Amino acid sequence: MATIAELKVKIGANVTDFDKKLSGINAKMKATGKKMQSMGKSMSMAVTAPLVAMGAVALKAFDTQIQAENKLRAALVANGQEVEATMKDYKKFASELQKVSTVGDEETLQLLQMAQSMGLTGEKAKLAAKQAISLAKAQNVSVQSTIRMTAALADGDANMIKRYLPALKGVKDESQMVSKANEMLANMFGVVKAEAESGLGPLIQLQMSMGDLMEEFGAIIAEGIKPLVDKLKEGVAWFQNLSAGTKKTIVIVAGLAAAIGPLLVVLGFLISTILPALMTGLAALTGPI
Image (cartoon, rainbow, N blue to C red; front, side, top):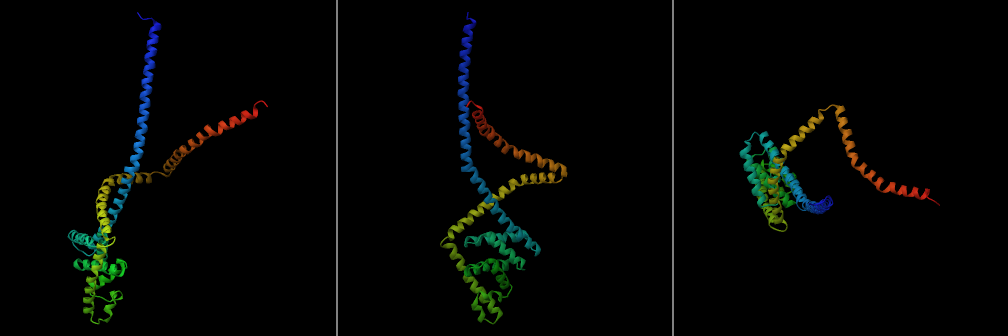
């Protein structure tokens, strides 16, 4: 029969062994935790951050495209046109034009919207947009300025475009002037194609194709975050409807919460550095001489 002393020795040995094993487990858990933190930081830098950046680019691309489409829709409604069929036709036209040029489909949609706003519809609007691009590329000017000239030309007025086409100045008959201008602009489209086929043109076209893909991703992201945005709007509305006193209290509490972190840093510095130094100095002053 074991004595009490022997039991104490056995229990003590067992407890010591248990403590050692527990310490080993704790050490392994800490090491695993550190590895997980390190992995998390690495993934945040290598995966999360790029994905967030790509998401922002996708949302921006989607916004640019959808804004162009919505403005064009509004112009169609203002002109009393059938919206869906015309939008389908215009989007196909813009997409086909993008394939042979360095002009994005959203920019062509903007030109079509401007042409619509000037009273042009259908084929006339598409011709004005295409000619605006041709003239802009050939003369190295902005399409926002050339669309006004080509829109007037599509309506039978070549007077505005004469400043960029000096060959028209010798033509007296208005109909001949319009015909000559259309012929010259049709030939200028070769400049648009040449730009897309040479130099950085192919890379720009690749970039536009990637932009179209980003637009699709952006549409998915925008649809996904819409419920969150709606909830945030509800939260903002709730806060706006609070009384002035309640808002003031919330702001004060938030300010105090924000100040706790820096305050703890300062207190920690005082306790760990300043106070020990002062105590050491006082001890030196009051000690025996």
